[in-house]
Length: 249
Image 1: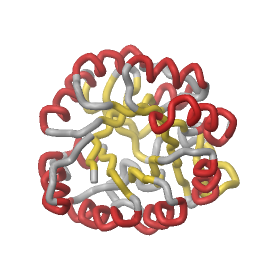
Image 2: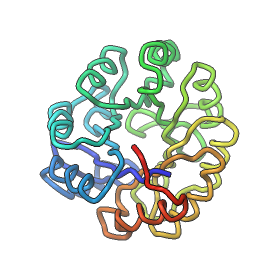
Image 3: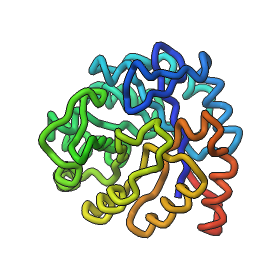
């Protein structure tokens, strides 16, 4: 199981929000490129970049910083936040990003999802963000009358193979991940799931690791790493101990 550090970008800085609220912003670094290098040096197999400005604006806003990070590290990057057109997906993949994550766009345009699958295959994933069981969109500012399980079923039918699942009530809170919802989503959808939101301890990692058999293939970690609640090297070692082999990107 992969452990993937998150780098959330806002105004060119590396920040973290609690439950997606701008008012809760904590700035961890003015140098996100250096943060990316740090995680790579410790052993991260890939990085998860979120364009927060893009998520709220509805179009990518931090492509310059993302390009700089691409030039600074060798590990693969996955990028989400405000990517809502085929042109945006193509542009970001051509930059050298390994995987683009569709969020709000997957709700508003199934046609876009289908076209992305047809053209880019597994280089496109869908982020499913949950608020009280319903799908949250547009930077988590609103929800739609659809459950995460319903959305997963629909996008699986379109050919998507992988989802990033975030319980927005847990994100940035260090309250622990929503294990029950993560397991259910993986088992009912049959999709590969990367869990995100709420990891606060080594024990959380062991519990998530138990979900690998259900289809959970990775864990995105943000605040737990930046606050020092969990050290990346230790998290990577735990996953290697449990699997008996080194991680691969």
